[in-house]
Amino acid sequence: MRIRIVDAFTDRPFTGNPAGVLLLDSDGFPDDSWLQHVATEVNLSETAFCHPLPAHGEADWALRWFTPATEVDMCGHATLAAAHVLHTTGTASGTVRFAARCGILTATAHPDGTITLDFPTSPLTPVEIPEGLAEALGAKAVSVHDTGVHIGDLLVEVADERTVRGLRPDFAGLVALSERGIIATAAAEDPSAGYDFVSRGFFPRVGIDEDPVTGSAHTALAPYWSDRLGRDELTGLQASARSGLVHTALRGDRTLLTGRAVTVIDGELLTAP
Image 1: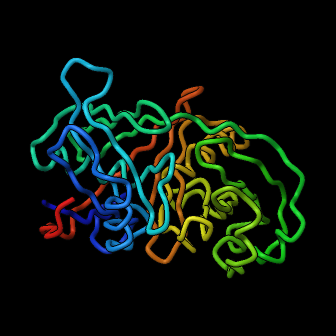
Image 2 (image 1 turned 135 degrees about the horizontal axis):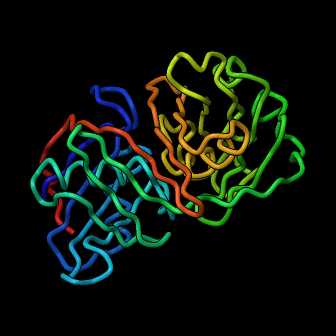
């Protein structure tokens, strides 16, 4: 079975967010325990598993994502990675439709090499600042929003870009504060640098202390910053050590996420399900 490692939301190897991708030739998924074992072995923030669906249905491929510790409802960078593999191997062209736990998602490849994902926009609900958040995150919150059922994060605006970049969280302290994790964000210090806002994502509850570039988080960041900045199309920089850019376009209850990807490893998985 072929297994690939793809760096997503970047056009350069060893940057962006790496994801494992397995295209299964079966008409269903193997046992959950095998999927989890593979994801734990790959040991990246997400591994995507896909299998083809019958023709003429509402989707072309079934898609699931696993962290090293658990399955998640929605993942942007591993979807981008899966779409990249489907297109670069000639398995698919144009728009690919995925059936996932969060609904039908699409990925459209463009002639310039970018891929646009169509994801549900995360609903934002203002909440009180949780007790202990400042201590665990390492910075005071300007505002806090719940991001809804599919990603289950707290979106936390902090004072400025420098604060986001300098965060050194207490990961054990963050675990109890949200269902999945914490998205820390601020407006760009210098929008002429090519991005409108910055973020970092911390998800120790699902086995990922810091995620390099979190596509799903941008389904919440897009409506938040579009409302603040008065524009529907923005660019976010996730300011992790690997870093990456996500171009967002808010379309009501859908958010478009556009980026690039590059395959860095193409190998063979020797353990069959």
